[in-house]
Image 1 (cartoon, rainbow, N blue to C red):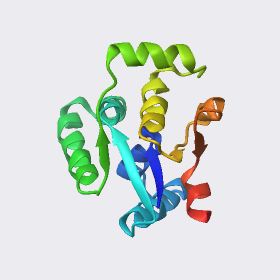
Image 2 (cartoon, rainbow, N blue to C red):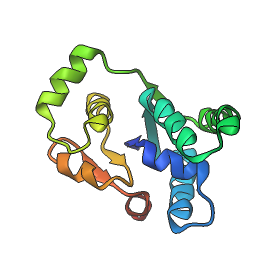
Image 3 (cartoon, helix red, strand yellow):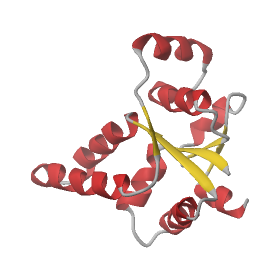
Image 4 (cartoon, helix red, strand yellow):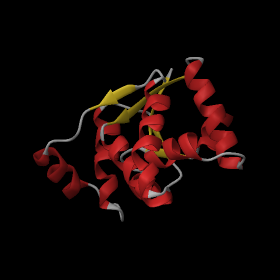
Length: 144
C-alpha cells in the first residue's frame, strides 16, 4: 500500500468543491483510500489552513458552522493524523527545503519524516521539492 500525504489543497477540494473535474478526481482518490489502496496522512497544520479557507470563502456568521461540518467530514475518514512540527524542526527543514511557499515546509517535512511515497496536491510549487518527495495531482494518483 502506498503512503500518501494529503495537502490541504486536496482536502479543501474534497470538502468544499462540487461538480468540477478536480472534485471528481479527488472523490475517486478518497474512494481508493477507503478501499485500502493508499494509506493517507494529514497533519494538524491542515485543519488550521482549512479554517483560513473558510474565513476567506464564507460569510463571517457561517464560518464556525461550516468549519465544524468540514472537520466532521474529514475526521470520518481513516487518516493518519500527524502532529505539528516543533519550532526547531521547522527551522531545520526550512533551511533544507527551497520551496516558494514557505507555509508548505511543514507539509513536505512531515510527509518525508513519515516516509510517505508522495504528496497529493493541487499546488504546483511542490514540484520544487521533488528531490525530497514526489508530488502528484489526484488525477495522476488514481491512474497509477
